Length: 120
Image (tube, rainbow, N blue to C red; front, side, top):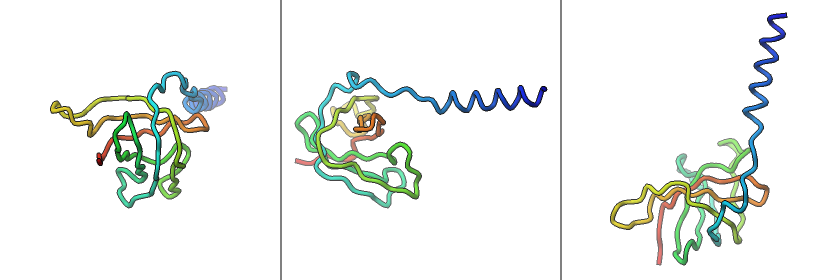
């Protein structure tokens, strides 16, 4: 009986950890247009995208999309998306490099990314 209770508790904890609420689209209040996406050999940012964010041309880098392992690379389709600022770790000189964002994907998952480049 004790083994049954222990196994039941483990299964319940595992199910609870996997059950993740979908993000609220209203929280993603910034519009972004992605014009290109590519896989890179950089393990820190295996996916990069060229985008226009707040009128600036930027390059965003981030990990794999949710549900994809490191051996299953993916790209993000060009188009318009919603994004939100998660953390501002930019320099005090006003640079936007290292601002952390979260992009809302069409399936309701999110992609964590950082500004890794700026162009004119």
